[in-house]
Amino acid sequence: MLSRNVIDTLLGNVSAGIVAVIVVVSVLIAVAIAVGVTIFFIRRSYAQKVGNAKVAADKIVEDGKSEAKALRKEALQEAKEEQRRMRNEFERESKERRGEIQKAEERVLQRDELLTKKETLLDKKMDSSDEYKKSLEEKEKLIDKQQEDLKESHNRILSELERVAGMSTEQAKAQLIEELLVTVRKDAGVMAKEIENTAKEEAEKKAKNIIGAAIQKCAADHAAEVTVSIVTLPNDEMKGRLIGRVGRNIRALENATGIDLIIDDTPDIVTLSGFDPMRREIAKQTIERLVSDGRIHPARIEETVEKVRRELDVQIKETGENAAFDANVHGVHPELLKILGKLKFRTSYGQNVLNHSLEVSYLAGVIAAELGADVKVAKRAGLLHDIGKAVDHEVEGTHIQIGVDLAKKYKENRAVIHAIEAHHNDVQPETLEAVIVQAADSISGARPGARRESLENYVKRLEKLEGLANSFAGVEQSYAIQAGREIRVIVKPEQVDDGSTIFLAKEIAEKVEAELEYPGQIKISVIRETRSVDYAK
Image (cartoon, rainbow, N blue to C red; front, top):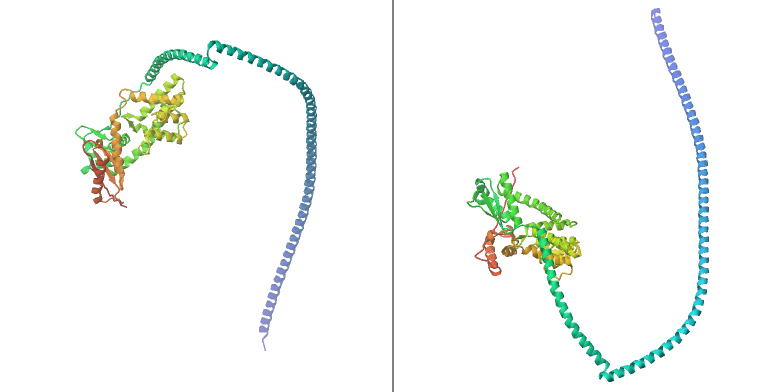
């Protein structure tokens, strides 16, 4: 049996467990009640929000319906106003058109009335014309009768005159005409001789005055071009640097420019010899820049030559523009101005062609002003008359035909084209301006010191020599140097090997001997150069 203490202890433990259980149950009940209350309030809040949203939605719908009604009412009002406006406009236009139609109908009625009146008047005139026609027929019959009477009288008088004179009417006419012709011819011959002599004297006097005035106003003074240029060096040491080690620099310069460099004992001077002024200018500027820069070697030489060529192209264009400005000739095509600038480096019988063209333009303008011709056409044609010489070494044909083709290509005036074509009488001049350009060209070329004929033949011979060498396969470029006593031929290394250069030089020499005439002998130098380039990285 359990003791009382043990039972009390157990009862105490049981009571404590029951109390704990009661506390836990109470807590759970309280939590459940709290959760339920929370859910209730949440649902109530949600229901209230839903209700508020429905009220707001209903209000929005009502507002939308009210606004839609207002817009519809406004649209209907605008439609009614537009309809009223269109109706008023239609009625106005209809009224105007009805008025125009009514006016047209009135004009038609007036024309009908006028035509009716004209028809009535025409009928009356026709009746009166019939009566007038009858009276005319009677008068014509009377006139015919009188003419027959006159003819009979004339025939009787002629017969009596022929009987008295002893010759027919035709013989008398022939005799009178012959006597009259003899007299007229005699008087006309004397008068024509007097007129011719007077005209010659006046024309010669006036022509001298015009040409004298033109030359006096155009006081151009330029001598014939030469075939050498001089480059001044700072010291004689620079000559050695231009020649380079074993002559590599001077060879590179001559090969790149086609100009012969003459370095002799003359202190501080290098002479450039060549017939092409453009090549000489390129060589001159190249040497001046190399001397100024101080770096002289083959690669630098080639780089400088290319740079000078590019800059010279710009200078050529500027030269053409300046020439046109100086001659007061405007509106020339830019490409034609560029070609005109090339004339600075062309010579004709030793005379600079650009200076000659400017001089011809001045002279033609003065003469045209004196004679009352078109000064603008005369000056323009004078400036462009030798334009073909700028490219005659590049294009087949005479400089006249090339010039005409260029002028046509760049839309020049027909009168200018004709003056270019006629300035050497390839065609007969048909305008006064063409004759003036002919005269101005002759004056410019014939004045003392203007030309030196031997240079033109010299240039043509060198051009033929270079053209002959360029005609061979594998030739890249050729340069006639030393006044034509030597021609240097540069070949393409990928097409001509070292062994073939000997045969090429011999073939060129044989063709030169067969086709050209020249004093002394010509040295043919064939140059083949292969370059290998690499870069250190």
